[in-house]
Image 1: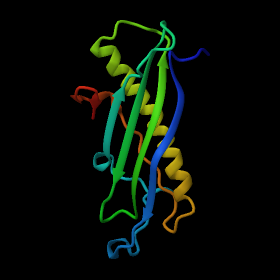
Image 2 (image 1 turned 135 degrees about the vertical axis):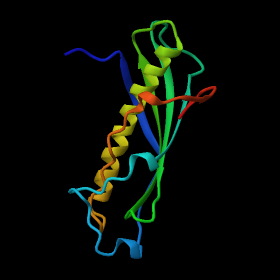
Image 3 (image 1 turned 30 degrees about the vertical axis):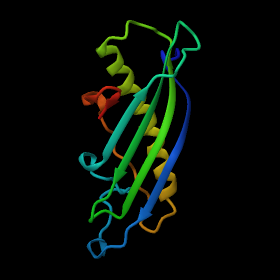
Length: 151
């Protein structure tokens, strides 16, 4: 095994909210598996990418990513809002083409998303409706919304 060129150096949550929803539509409803899984196409996602003011090591490309997720549906027992930031470095400093930057964002988003999945699973495991598991998402279709953002 060898290290990936993309390394997560630090991440922290700025907002983490999980609420059980009481709704008549949920009476007698059970999850279809051991977990409640929200509909992937209804998870609201915002990704912001920024660069630090200075690059510490000339041979590395560093960037900061913010990921925000939210979900609220009438027929689902949970609603959540999550915001976190991650600091990444890439040791294979290539020319920063759009394709290369897109690849970095896709991989960094996948890393941060997996931390959110684990956190929500842990928090929901002691909630009255039982555990919530975020679905696996394919971030390769991310498109740049405007300068500095992908969604």
